[in-house]
Image (cartoon, rainbow, N blue to C red; front, side, top):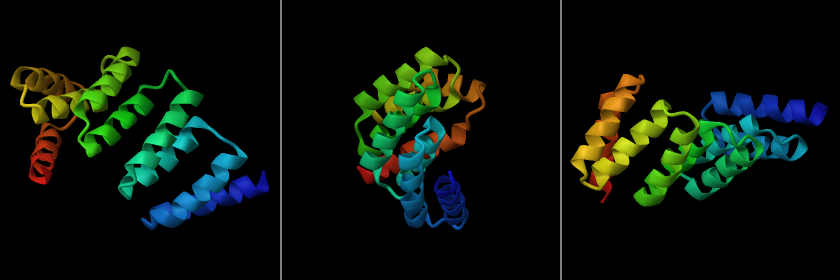
Length: 152
């Protein structure tokens, strides 16, 4: 228990300082000692912030295994596929998140982004309106599409 507490506290301290590499090292120690969905999610988030999409995806999938009824985990898996440019798989995972929570704004935004990247204006606008209705920033969606198109 003490090792776990120290690893969590140290990881959090590193994350607050935006030192994700050191935070990841400590989160990995903690997840081995006491695996929880929220800890696996936090590890995935740290990996994703560094651009390690495969490792982030693995962590999110582990979180999903531990807590399959949480839309956030499926939605985060979808965002890693968006980062890889794999929009079809991202759509599958975002849709899975919506099957858990039909108003999950992040999944709605991901679908809007995916359809925007695939030049499907009707579906893009449909999900854009739903995402905004559920509290997601329209500007953030549009900025993400613009940035992704620049990378192509």
